[in-house]
Length: 265
Image (cartoon, rainbow, N blue to C red; front, side, top):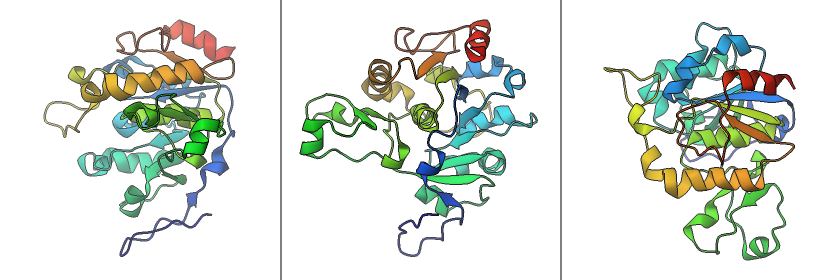
């Protein structure tokens, strides 16, 4: 158990905070990442109950009534627990592992029943690290030092922190790699802000969304970096959303039947 620095007058952190080293390479094979796009409604989640699943934010609602416990739940939206308290509490009670900011962990109304992992951003490289590229766990853009895109990257080891692409889906992808999964299937990765999230309805609380604002500046460049520098024989990513804004040349789109075959091999 690791001690964690706290701000003055902050509430004590829950006792079962874990180090990300504890969950590195503990898994293998296939994993589903359940995101919040509308196409997730068509995913027959219970047919794949024996396959590990990582989920984010309000997509946890897909798990209600199924008995499926997410392998990991990730939330980087610090207001989500206020806007969707019931969904957030359900995630804390049912997930095997939870990844949150330290600030969120200090303000929990419901403590996680599984392991709690505290998120931090990957550090900026020193000039020496930038020139030598000696940290193989942090894959970075080769943009010129000082440019906006130099903070784009992919973390293979979350003990060193993660790269924020302005979508929690990208954190989930880094979690999948960190844990040791080799085949990742994206569910609900529509990236369509106008279509909204499948769990939000008229009259319900609507969380802010920055997909349109950040898609071309942060999200797509980050996914392209992952596709070019991380994806390979040991780490493959597929998209189950037929209406996704992510180009198929970056993450190939597969049908449900194709996904079944991928998972079984």
